[in-house]
Image (cartoon, rainbow, N blue to C red; front, side, top):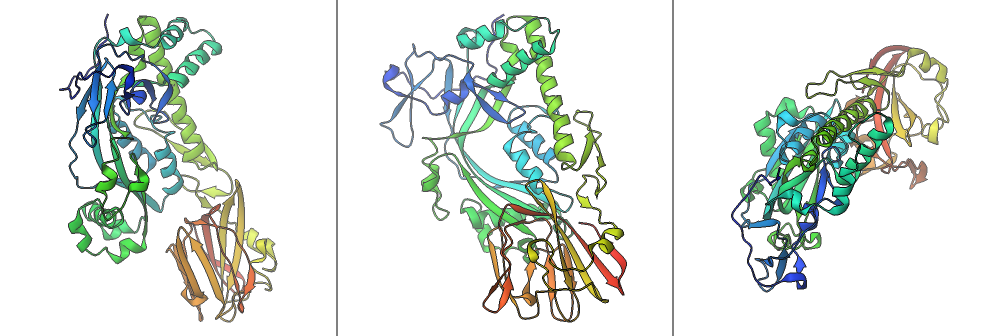
Length: 505
C-alpha cells in the first residue's frame, strides 16, 4: 500500500532551473531525518533520500536574487512576517510542559504518554528549577518564515540504508538482543518523522517564580505581568505594555532570562528586533511540526506492529526512569504506572521527607552532637562557643558534586559568630550583586529572621557559587559561584539550649 503524507498546502515553489547548482533550502536536512519524542529533538541519520529531477526552487523573500533548490518530495509555503503578541505558558511542574511540547509537535493528547519529551532539554531545565516553592513560565514570540510539507508516496523515496535496516529487523522478538536491535534502530532514526514543519525563529523568556506570587495574582494577572516583563526584556512584545509598571512583588519573587533561537543571534537588538527577524530565513529552526509514527514506513505489518510496541516500551521505560531519578530528586525510590494519568509516590531516604523528597530532616540529636559551632565547613563559623540562649541557628544544606554539605551559622543578640555588626559582605547570585553591611542582606525570601542588629533573608533555591571567607577592608566576606545550589534550609530557635521549632525547606 502506498504511503502518502497527510498535509498538502498551496506551494510557493518555482521551476527556475537550479539542479545541483543551488544551495538546498534551509531546513530540508532536518525534514530528512526522524524525530525522537522522548528526547524532543530530530535525529541525525536520514530516513528519506531527496531527488531534484523537477528542478523546484525557492527564492528567499529577503534576498530576491538568492535561489535555493527544493526536493521533489516537498512543498514550501511562505509565511509573511507579522509581529505577534507574546504568549505565556505557566508550568506548575515539568509534566505540564511536556504536554505543551507534545501539542507543538503535532501529537494529540490521546497519543501522549508520560515519557514523551521527558528527556528533552526544556523538561530537564524545568526539573532543575521547579520545586514545591517555585514554578515556571515560558513566554515567547515566534515568527514563522515558511512551512515545508512532504507529499507523494513516502515509501518511494526512503533512504536505502534506512530501508535495509528496517527490513532486517526480526519479526519475532524472543530475546533481549532482539529488543536491543529495535531500540538501536529507534535511537538512530527516531520514533516518528515530520510531515509538515513550520520553520522560523523564536525569542523566549523563561521565568522562575516563587509560589507566593499565586497569592497575589490570578492566572490572567500573572500572564499580564509576564507579558510586560517580556516586552521590557526582548523589545519584541506588545510595546504598549512597556508603559505599564511591573508589580514590585512580581519583580521581587521572579527571575527571568531571555533566549534567542534561529537566525543570526548577533543581529538581535531589543530596540530593533526586526533586524534579527530578517536573518531567520537563512538559518531557521523548527517551531511546530506534524508527526507520524515511524512504524508506518514499514511494508511488513509485523515489523510495523513491533516498532509501535517498542516505541511504547521506550517511552514507558523513560517515564519510569524519570520518576525514579527526578521525581524523587535522587533521594528516594519512586513508582509510576507510566500512563497519562500517573500514580506516582516517593519512598524517601531516611534523611529526607516531602512528596518529592526535597525537605531535609535534621534530627534533634544531630544538634547536640555538633558541639561547639566552631571551625565548621569552609570556616564560615570561626570563633564561637556552644549556642547561647536566645539565639537563632541556621542550617543551610548544599549539594555539590552529588554530596550533601551543611553550613551552620549562629546569630544571637550580641554577635554573629564571625560575622559581626558593621562587617561588609558580598553575595553574588544569578547575575544580581549585593554589597553592603550585613544589616542589608536580602537574597530572595523563603525564611526571614531578625535580631537586634540585623534582618536576614535567605532563599534556599537559588544558584550559589564558591565560598571564599577572607578579611577584606576590615571585615570578612563570602562570595558564592554557580556550582553550589542551596537545596534545603532548616532553621531552629533555641531557648536555653532546647529546640522549640523547626521549619522545613
